[in-house]
Length: 303
Image (cartoon, rainbow, N blue to C red; front, side, top):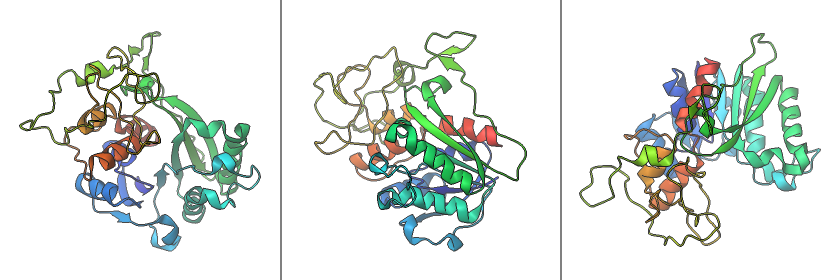
């Protein structure tokens, strides 16, 4: 099916849909580095710019609209006026495109915290908004380690099916578990996926294999915890810790931070996927992305 992608970033969600056989016909993001990364790896159909400045008439009709709308402001949103809250303008733009273009389906990705905002009233209002636009809506919290991603990344997927379509769509079923119970495979560990990656060096042929030199201190808070090579990675982050830059998870040997390429591997990007921009920008692009492996499972279910 033909896919329109909003808040595309470097293209993790889009790549999964391409891998599942769909065609991305239009994409958009405001970050120039992410747009350049997207163009190099996926295609030139991405438009750089603020979605608020792009009228619906300039966006093509697609069978599916996908994207992860940022949720800044939801924590302070009036529970009865989510759409009208100016702080939630990016959510409003996603809603606007769905309402105006009326795709068959939409897929929205968001952080776990969206479920608890306003004691659950925010997600309830979001569902009501999309239902009023003509969709049957459901959502689910996923731990991506249960789907083969070597990372305990928890994300919410909101799925909409236009009311005139009779066939429903199910979420993908997990194939992995922490204890490998019920004939499932064990979680994929960070040590397993990085075991054959050599140390970064000037003559190393692996692209983007450079790392943050931010000191490893092994204190018990975000970005300073020991990484256990026998477990999936902690969530790959796109944010800083208040001191600037991006918090980069420690390598499973805990002697340095992971390289850009290593974080991309943990996010299930292929080795030939090239990231552009500064180190901080590349880390942020990767941390903001949906792992393509999980995205492809979503996309195959829709197909």
